[in-house]
Image (tube, rainbow over all chains, first blue to last red; front, top):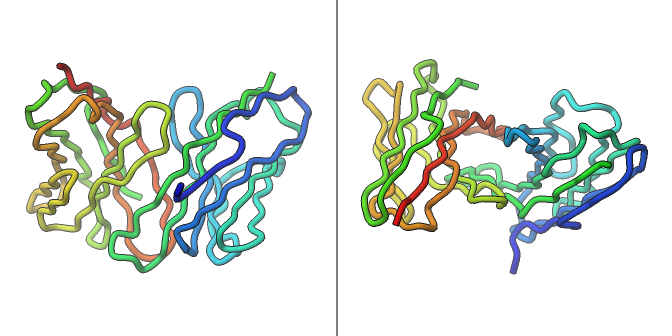
Length: 114
Length: 111
């Protein structure tokens, strides 16, 4: 069973479109994250939710809107896609208070904006 | 979060120990050292973490200097599957701490 899953794995779309990426974790964790890895391979945090509440919001354009319907899901909706949004997006989860406090990452969603 | 410095790349022969250094001279007293790795095109994977004592698990060992300004990740018997980018990250332990990734070290295991 996949611990952190993302759909779709690949997403190719035109500039100006709106798209969503879904993330689900079956680890029972209370915290979920979105990271972006650009073409230069830098990984940066975008958002984090704890028990469905937004707790980390880095400097991300308003076109990006995360939504957490429950603790096991954190979706990322992107409006008016731009060329610069092309990247690999990783979802992660963790359980606050665990000994290691490690984050478990999903396989990534490669977004290509044409 | 404290900044870390790692060599951009390293090579190691299969079966030998891979020693990956990391400098974190501005680490504060309540910050831990974490190591993650990213195998090509996959999501990052947690390896190990420590505060001030040396740590060992089934994947690796972590040696932290007494002044905590640097550390070394040791993969005791490297295999081809250990080829990856290794990230040394310093962060607090409490709450939902974001991971701040640097450039990491690209480790290549050669047959």
